[in-house]
Structures are given as structure tokens and as C-alpha cells.
Length: 189
Image (tube, rainbow, N blue to C red; front, side, top):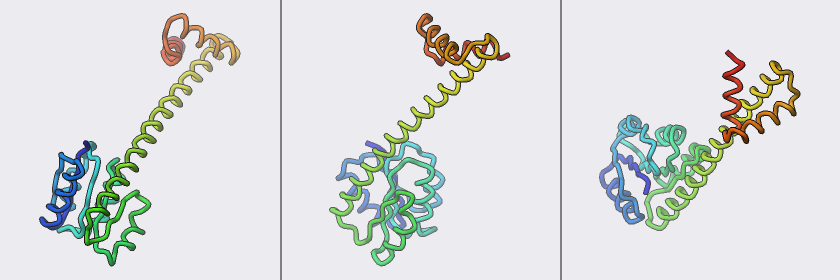
């Protein structure tokens, strides 16, 4: 299970949230009392969940939530008084932050927790796919540079250069990327 971070201005709120998290299967929970303390440790990339119980001792908490949403892949839940929950939701919804009004009910908390976990899981899948696509684009650029090099120095046509790279990859049991790198190393000095 992922690590969870609780940031709460009150010990009572922190204990309640920690109890709810433990009953939901979270075992690795870190607790902090202020936004500045949480900002110093915001580099913890292995956080799966951040719960901010507002107000904090040094700030309200929604600014911290936005900063963490921008700098991590953690799911974020912001707990605030029910009379201001709608206004806070408008400020943080675009950052993927879920807002729960106080008083906190176990059922609402568990449903929101499941929603945040599902959303985070989907986001991580999209991030992984994005990395794969960027790698593929980088490989295509490299191969196209190698084709252009073959066209320039060996006067190949584009189809001939493509076929040459494919054939070299097959014959040497290398990837097209490795063949392209070898071509560029030979001709681009």
C-alpha cells in the first residue's frame, strides 16, 4: 500500500483521520501539524495519498494542496468546514483535489478515498503511457536522422534508407534505434 501523509492543525483531527486510514488498509502514515513542515517533505515521491485537514496552524491549506497536486502524483483530499466547502472546491477542482465537508462521516470518507485511489490509478496509467509514447517519438526522430544521414552521404532515397536500417537491424539482431545510433556515430562526427 502507498504511503499516506496527513497534515492537520489539530491533534484530534489527525487521530480521527489516521484511524480512518488504518481501517482502510493504510499502514505507512506520516503526520504533520503545519503546511511549512509538509512543504519541506513534499519531495517524497512515493506518497500515494495526502489528506489536509484545514485550517492548518500556519495557513489555511488549499495552497498546500495545490502545490502538492502540481509537484506529485499523490491523490489529495482536502477537509474543510461545510459552509466554505463549495467555495474551496471551485478553487481546487481543476487540480484534481477532492474536498470533503466537516463534520467527517466514515462513509463519505471511505467513498472519497476509493474515488481518489481510482483516479490516481488511472492517472498513473496515463503517465506511464505518455512516457512510452515520448520514448517512441524520440526513437522515430533518431531513426529519421539516421535516414537523412544515409540520404546525404550515401545518396540513398528515403525508402532505400528505411530498408537499409530495417535490414541492418534484422541481420545484426539489434533494434532500429541501435542501428540508427551506429549510423549517426559513423557519419556525424
